Image 1 (cartoon, rainbow, N blue to C red):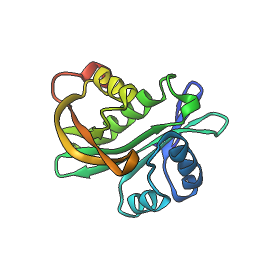
Image 2: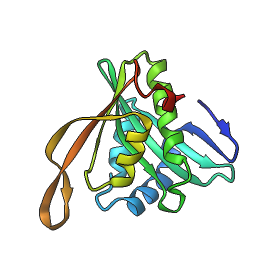
Image 3: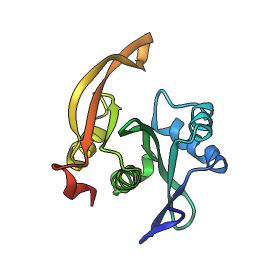
Image 4: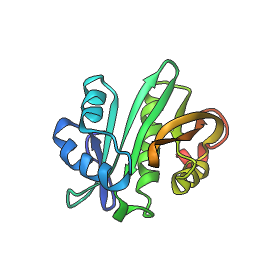
Length: 164
């Protein structure tokens, strides 16, 4: 994957040297962001980290993937707020699916906040389907919790056009 070029942006493997920028975007995009330690642990444990950069070198977005038995778990996908709505999320999803297929996995699983309408729309348009709910999964304001919608993308059958 090293440096896959797409017109004005490119994908690369996330490394420790990317984490300062990753954490800045994470904090700007999420009210309850991952810590730098979460990203360090993911890389140390051999999870797949993908960075999407503009040709100028500016980080646009990233994702973290964890293989689990026969599926890839999309743990985190984030696009810098100023870059949202321009196809970066779709580029990251396509690369995530490409990696999962290369690993010979059957599908991809993710959790998303019900309040994250933009992400849900992206995942549904890509071909993910809601398969369940995890109660009180995410931290929320005022010391409460928010459910997670569990979504799955199968590599056999539906949704294949979006992934190509």
